[in-house]
Length: 168
Image 1 (tube, rainbow, N blue to C red):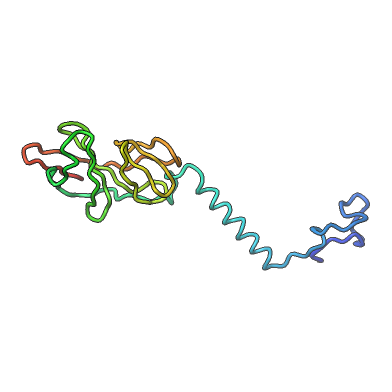
Image 2 (tube, rainbow, N blue to C red):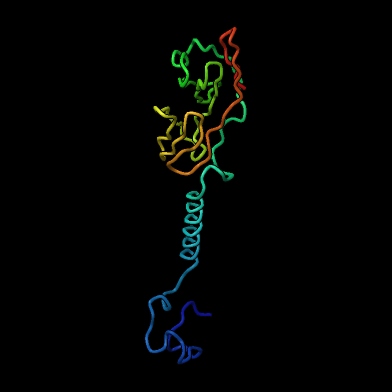
């Protein structure tokens, strides 16, 4: 079976698109190598398009550790002395932010962006991903930029007598 259709082909009738003139598309042969490379390009394009979707919600999204465990002294972080203060630190190698939400309550957030796994930075109003611009408020909820889910929060309890936080 020939790889191309030509107007001189006996099976080509008068109603055929190639009748009378030859189209470059119809007469250019496609070999196995070209066919496979075009298939690879199409698959790569489909994969990239799926990355641009909801972000942070598919099976390939980066994951923060599901649990961390630590006890920290509030006095070790001067920024936690007042409500609204944020301490950026690392627990067991995982980047976290501890936020003082009230006089006796704190939250601990993963600083791993749920979209592409970059480490988010603290800002005056919350957090921002330096990689793609997603923004989060001080409680870790997504507020703008590249669409993604909120930052992971870890269980945090405060012992006011000892002045310590138990995370995890």
